[in-house]
Structure formats: C-alpha cells, structure tokens
Length: 254
Picture 1: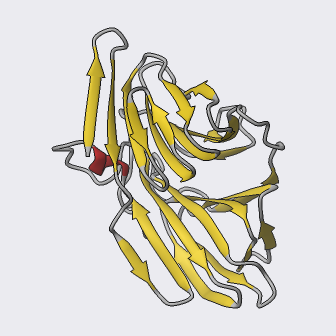
Picture 2 (picture 1 turned 30 degrees about the vertical axis):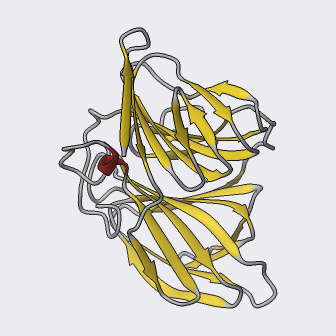
C-alpha cells in the first residue's frame, strides 16, 4: 500500500494490491475490495457511502438460490457473460454488457441469480452502496446503458437526483472507461468528493502511481488527476461524497 501527494495538485493517491479477502464456494467465487482499507488508520472498511466492490465469478450452470437483501443498494456491472436474475416481484432479467441492474433493497428484496449450462463463464462487479436511510421502499432498476466510447468515461449510475441512467440512494457516481494502451484521460472528480478506482482489465498509471490488474486506488482532493493506460485497460471509477450520511445495516455492504 502506497500513497503520494503533491502540493501543486492538492491530491493524495492511496494504492492497494489485489484483495486477499475472498470466498470460494466452488462454482461461485467472490473477492471483496474494501475502499476504506486503502487509507492507513481509516476506521471503516468502506469509504463513505461506498461499502465494497465485489469481483464475482459464476461458472456456467450455477444457481444462487432465492435470498434476501436489506438496507443496501446493489449494482451489477457485467462486462462479459450474462447474469440471470429472478425475484419475488415476478421479474426475470438478463444483465450483460449492454444493461445495468440496480437492486434498491430497502426494507427487503428477495432475488436469485443464475447462469445456464450453455452460458459463458461470468465475471462481474457487484457494487454495494450504503443508503442514506433505513427501510426505504424496495425496488429494482434494469436499463440499457449507452455504448462505450473508447477512451471516454461512461456515466453508469449516480444519486437519485442525477442525470445518470440508473440511481442509488446516496452520494456515489460510477463511471467506466475502456482506455487504449498509451491513451490518457482525467479521473472523474467532483468538488469536495474523492474518487475510488478499480482496474478490471489491464494496467494504468494514476498520477505517478502504477495500478495493475484488479488493483485499486483512492484519490482524495479536488485537483484533476491523469490516468494513462500502460496496456489496453478497463477501469471503473466511483466519485464519492465522504461526508454523506450513511447507514451500516446492509445484509452484505455494512
């Protein structure tokens, strides 16, 4: 774990290696990335309303039986493969590279996940956001998302009042980017907020720090920070209001 700072940029970058916090359930495997653990001495595994970013694998022919979530916002980002969802509200949904799903669990939401035998292996991110209040109205959002444009950030979700395609009930914006090798962009940021970044594929330099495959970085401060791909890369970034009111009673994303 490293950090670097610059008086000129007024930002600080904390990097973290691939997580060692994992669960292996055979055909279903998960790796927990806790953004708060990137900061030395931080007393919360989450960072403000962003509780955890979970890298999930499901082999073909896997069923995760009906189970309940409460008091958390769960976003399923599926760049490859398909994740099949059904729930007690009668929804049967397929999330893939062209769709995003947000389960606003609220006071309680029951669902199951599945891959069929002839589906490809699934690798996705499941993002857990802490809502601002407990026992909110449960619901689900499943929408097409804009086609990605190489070397540009795509806005995926944001707070309820934002113009993002889907919404969560707290101050987190999420973006992804397919960045070609040697291309440079600027990390998404908002005044007074911080940005957490996950490298899903490839490797990048954030400022002067190197962040490799499945590694993460937390950038604090308000200045623009450059991101340069050292290989063809897929990056997911979260702009986070660290001072947002949060709850800590989610089923998983506490």
